[in-house]
Length: 409
Ligand SMILES: Cc1ncc(COP(=O)(O)O)c(C=O)c1O
Image (cartoon, rainbow, N blue to C red; front, top):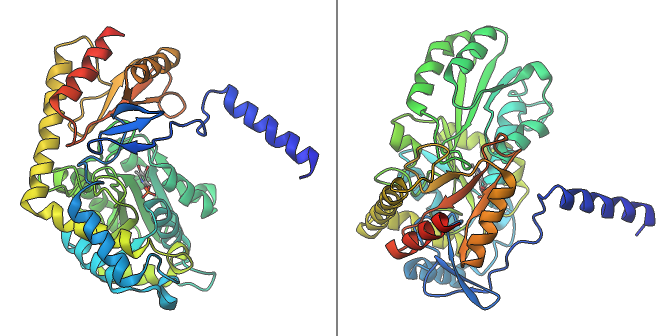
């Protein structure tokens, strides 16, 4: 390697490390003991309070069996991208199942929700090429706390400054002002938001948002499309686990989800009207030119969606809700305070200082508990938090142990 380039790389790594935001020294889990809430690291058992496996499905016997069966039928890899020879029946079955779960006409599956966001948003802004009929004058409006994959999808679309706007977090008055200021200036508008926001466990009120968009629809020739990324909501939020749409009663034009969190498996998806999904299949580069998840993963996801509709799934959703209620009741008896009041499995406890937050995480780690610290720039200065993520696989004792240690810090 060129020594000058090597020097730059070393300096950059030093810069990252000295700012305290390195990612590469993460804890390595050797295996799990008992169930998905107990990880073994360097021979010791830790209770995990920072996993997205909200229903504890990653070791579910039915999912593991379906994964093995799909691998037996189709092999362990897709062999090619979808339009070449990689379109296996298990993907079509999964698309049918997840579309029906969300009450939509069609679905398209991706290797991850990150790649879904990157490709889908770009395609709807720019079209697939210069000749595309969609390469028209679009205004993109995004919530300021949207996930990194949404931010990057807008970045790679290389829009002019006047074609993009950011509205203050969940601030529909600000969004209204942006829509008002831009009336008749653009062919179409894309409004993009997270459903559940992953740092806070709060959510966008899709019903109110939809009502607002309806009022401005006629001022843009091709209308306003609402895209919602509800990766932290689907599979765990709402009585039936249908996410923020179920909780708020509002519907997205395109809903983006992941099988890699509450569904306990891996891979991303988008659901919507057939015509939109048909267009995405013809235009999204991360779908056309990249392999889907493996057949086994698709088989396990298919089983997971089916399970969520069953008595077993409803039971897990209830167990999760009970754990959230219990955690909040117990914390309510202490002086610990939340950043916001959330009834989602993400419970952000306010610490308010980056050093104290990091010390608390280290203290909990010494006491065999895993949580994540979140500090500026991810959250505003003074709003440093530890993000606790509850799961249906936690016992009351797990929750009691966590709270005891939080108090004793
Ligand atoms: C809101 C949101 N969107 C997208 C993703 C990416 O999901 P995946 O792991 O399936 O790429 C995440 C995961 O962190 C997320 O929180």
